[in-house]
Image 1 (tube, rainbow, N blue to C red):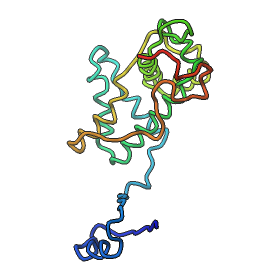
Image 2: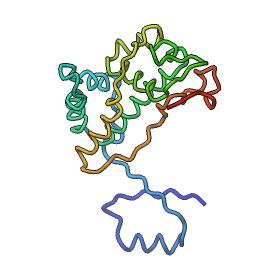
Image 3: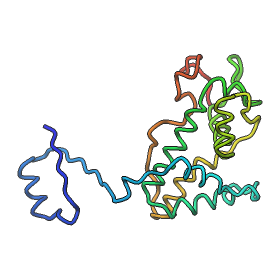
Image 4: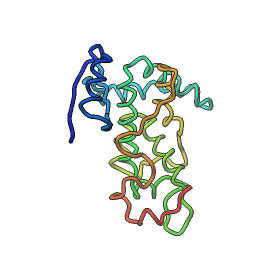
Length: 197
């Protein structure tokens, strides 16, 4: 039996909990918390505005490069931090294609050579880190994929912002996976046989 019960936390008294136990016994209870910000959505333009805050004048110090983005994101509702991570994962997923992997430099995909799935992920991060226009250009033309450039720290922005705001580690899995070979339909090679590392 599945039952949906909606109740405000202010109304969640000991008596209500007692009544639930009496009525449903040892049934499993799933709690979903909906905040006033849940209906708000981090827009595409807002996502790219935040990405544009990366401070490339601090190149060589990755923490300093991402610091303005972490600061800005940490001031937004937690729901937006999750949405930022979802949007980032979606964009990385879209770039997770064999044709993009074949155009990324030394680590390019070749069926008979070593290919690092991790490095390809970080190379895709570099595309997103360079902003909306560059991302869209590379997405539509894989030949524009940067050669031998990556930016792994992009992956840690949401977690850092969450921890800065809440003082607790972020435990969240995006709606889609950004790991290399997740976009199975975009790879002609059987991804279970691909070389990773």
